[in-house]
Amino acid sequence: MQIADGITYIGVNDHQIDLFEGQYIVPNGMAYNSYVIIDEKIAVMDSVDINFGEQWLANLEAALDGRTPDYLIVQHMEPDHGANVKLFMDRYPEATVVASVGAFNMMQNYFGTKFEGRNLVVKEGDTLSLGARELSFIAAPNVHWPEVIFTYDAADKVLFSADAFGKFGALDADEAWDCEARRYYFGIVGKFGPAVQKVLAKAANLDIQVICPLHGPILSENLEHYLGQYQTWSSYGVETQGVVIAYSSVYGHTKEVVELLAKTLEEKGCPRVVVTDLARDDQAEAVEDAFRHNVLVLATTTYCGGVFPAMHEFINHLVDHAYQKRTIAFVENGTWMPAATKGMKALTDQLSDIEYTENNVTVKGALNDDVRAQVNALADELVAKF
Image (cartoon, rainbow, N blue to C red; front, side, top):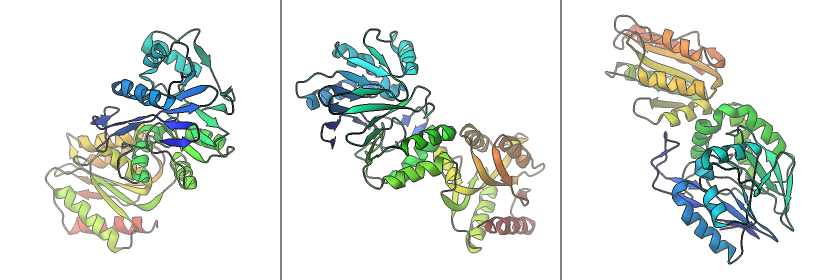
């Protein structure tokens, strides 16, 4: 795949993987992207997952057509990108590895060497001449690891963006960018919004025509959309007006109340209602939906005097990913001593900039007229926010 004259894609698709980073369901696999820039000197941009080292080097050798690379630029040392650095350096003993000081420290941890005598440490503002092209480096700490750098090729107006602007899914998957990029962002990068904001401010000063991430497709059209999405996501802004109802239910009574609330919200004109069963649905999708919308209803049963495990886990995900700037309401069920709302609020009080509704719903077993009245009152309060 030609990105520009002299820039070739040499990455791989992974359809063997079941869970990315040991937790994210990826039914359409993953892409581990790598690129080679061929000029007077040749630079390879990042490696790939350990399971695809030989395939990656074969792709590289085909693109080189008999030439030898001069540099391996390591933007990100996470093993899905950095695992084959030593393989590359052993294969090309005259090459120099280029990375941040943090990345070299990580290489010591992974490989037992910083490739002394064959390394070049770069930082914010440093440049590397390949001939007609001069690459410049942009520090991008905590997007999403601390050692990350971006690389900008001013000649071709290409930004090599490490994990930023990446998505789940192999490159041969026929799917829209937004959903899987959003799930990827909030699951993996989402906690680091302030760091993303800083690097977006730097990128605003560049003439970018192509974005080459380490996962997902190369972006060369409608860049305003992708940059705008990252601006919204990293500032914790609301992308879509609506209510997400995340619930868990043991015998179906809480689910029945949730379905009534969803129906009532729709009848009262709520612009969008999303319902997710935390015990059965992908929790990463639920986290994505929670960040996408501006109102979240947490509905669960009292369990062991506290919060049902699936709900407890979900709220922990929200805390871990810095969920904020949203409205939260509670629905609890407990046949003899409802305590879930108290437990959920204790957990969500760890979040910042959260507005709680005045109305919540308490169910003591099954749906009845009192619960219907509570649901109606909560629906009225939520719809008034749109």
